[in-house]
Amino acid sequence: MGLFNERLRSLDISLGIGETSRVTGATPTQIRYWEKKHLIHSLRHEANGNKRYSLSNIALIVMIKTMLDEGYTLAKASEEIEKSHQKADMLHVLMSTRLQGIQYDDQKTFLNFGPLENDPGFDVVAVVQENTAKLYKKAIQPPHHDPLSKNKDNTSKPT
Image 1 (cartoon, rainbow, N blue to C red):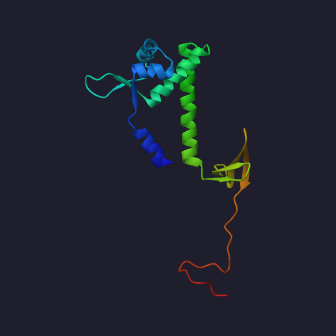
Image 2 (cartoon, helix red, strand yellow):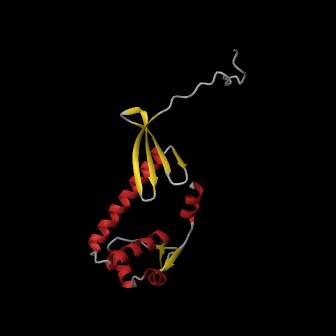
Image 3 (cartoon, rainbow, N blue to C red):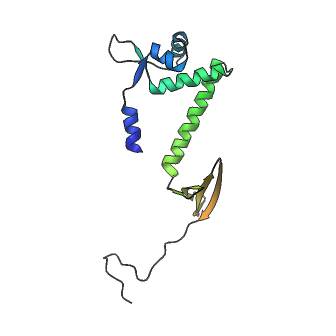
C-alpha cells in the first residue's frame, strides 16, 4: 500500500472553482469565503493561473458543505473537522508504529499490536467482527525448539 499511497499523493489532480462548485454543491462565494477563513487552500499552477483545488481540498469542501447542510455553524464544522483530523493522525501513528500483524478467518480479523509496555510477556490483540472490536491480552508464546532443526551453520544437530 505504500507505493499506492505515494502514487495517489503524487497525482496532480485539481479543479478550478467552477468545477469544484459543481462537484461539491458549494457555491463559488462559499468556497472563496472558506478560503479567506483559511479552512481550505487553493493552489496556482502558473504565476498568472487561476486558482485550483486539490482532491484533498475538494473532499474538505464536501465535508464543510455537508456539515453546514446538517445545521452546523461554520465555526463548529471547522472545529469538528479539526478533531476528526487529529483522530486520524493519532490512528495513523498507532497503526504505523505498533501494528505487527493482521490475520483473517471467515468472520473475524485479528490485529496484533505487539507487547504491552508494562507487561512485555503479553501482546495486545484486537479482534474485529462486523461492527464490534474487542481488545485482549494474549500471552506471547516462547519460540518452539525442535531438536531436529538446523543449527546456525545449516547442518543437522547431532543426536
